[in-house]
Length: 416
Image 1: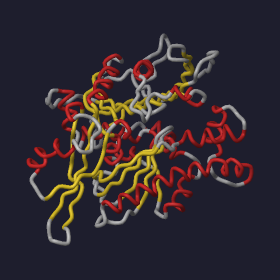
Image 2 (image 1 turned 180 degrees about the vertical axis):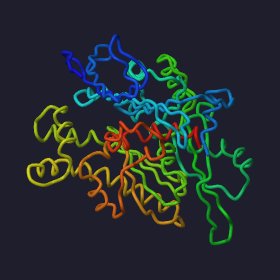
Image 3 (image 1 turned 90 degrees about the vertical axis):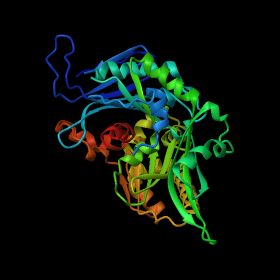
Image 4 (image 1 turned 60 degrees about the vertical axis):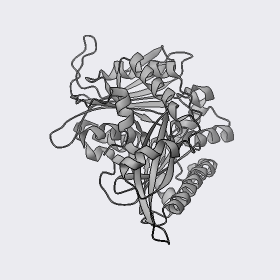
């Protein structure tokens, strides 16, 4: 394993599970798990050796249900791309390949994010990074199930009188028109029942989760994957992927997915998404706070954040005091979302736990701190428990679990 650095290049990191190929004249790397680090710009690099989104699926595949030997789950975040290939296993779905490519250029250049909460996605940059991931992974499948970030969709709760699914389907376009800031002809709509209640007069009301995605956003994703040599088989709201990792567990759960520039907040019960919120306070907020307060390069600040965390003792005390106000900002957003959820669903069972996912879940000390502030038991996401995978990656699984949660949840939809 070796490392060379390209001058004036923005760094990226990719971890890939190499399972089948040989590089040049080197020995076969079958069953070898090797981390691969990539440093470079978009082109220059150096290597160190039940589904509610039927509507979107029909749009992408003309309503034809297909079965493939394996699938790629691809999670395009604000500053990283996570991809994982899964096939049927002996007892559980089996992970056969994965890749994780992260740009750290965004730390020093705000406009280097891959997509933003203003619905802007930088297509060419994403395509080039996807090509790198595909080139290093060499997946057997080209069939992609991709995630849509919460800020790329419109999600809200609507109330209907007690009626059949067919009646709701007919009424939905007219009702949705009042809430969606785009013409109905320009969005893909889907919905699912998430609750019901009886009012003080004895009338039953249905609570419906409405999900709409701009058609232009769908077309962008189709273009991106086509240019990367892949076929976009299905699109799914990332919150649904996160909820899927809980399986049929009936425990009322709050999932907090802390990415680089966005935090996704999802509420689930009995394996069903019930409420969703999003915040622009995220992991990069802590990094920028360190860089500004200590007068250091943002990349060094990111390293310190990952190395020291918020343990808050000894030499780490100062770092913790700098980062905690920004972590508190994320927690306050979670508390606000929890208040809105409990107001929307007053008869729902009380939340019993918090699951942390996303790269932010790997911040040292975050579990205990969030548990104290939210006053609920906190655990890290553990989606690998629902898959078969090579024992050689066991040492990496604790760190990969929260990072790959969305990508794994995407593939799981095809095996349940």
